[in-house]
Image (tube, rainbow, N blue to C red; front, side, top):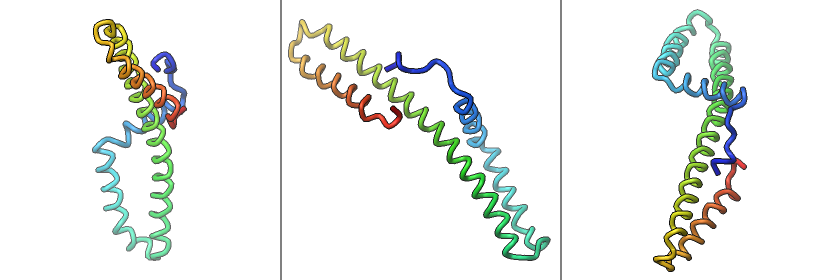
Length: 128
C-alpha cells in the first residue's frame, strides 16, 4: 500500500536509476555501434585473431553483466511502484463501493473479491 512505500531511495537505487537513464539514451546506442565499427578493423593492428576476439568478448561480457544488474534493479523498483499504485486504486475503489452498498447490496460480493485480490497481490508480490 502507499503507506508502505519508503520516502527515499538508497545510494544503489539512485545510482541504478541514473545508470538506467544513461544507458537508455539513443546517443549511448550510437556510441556502442561506433565502438564496434572502430573495433572491427583493429584486427589488422593486433593481428592475432584470438587476442582480438578475447578483448571484445571480455569487454562486452563485463559491460553486459553490470548493465543487467543495474537495469534489473530499476525494473524491479518500477514494477513495485506500479503494483503499489494499483493496490491503492483498488483499495480506494473498494472503499467507495462499500459506501454505496446501502443503495446496492449486491456490491458486497464484489467488494469482498476486490479486497481479497488486493490482499492476494500483497502476499504474492515477488518484491516483498
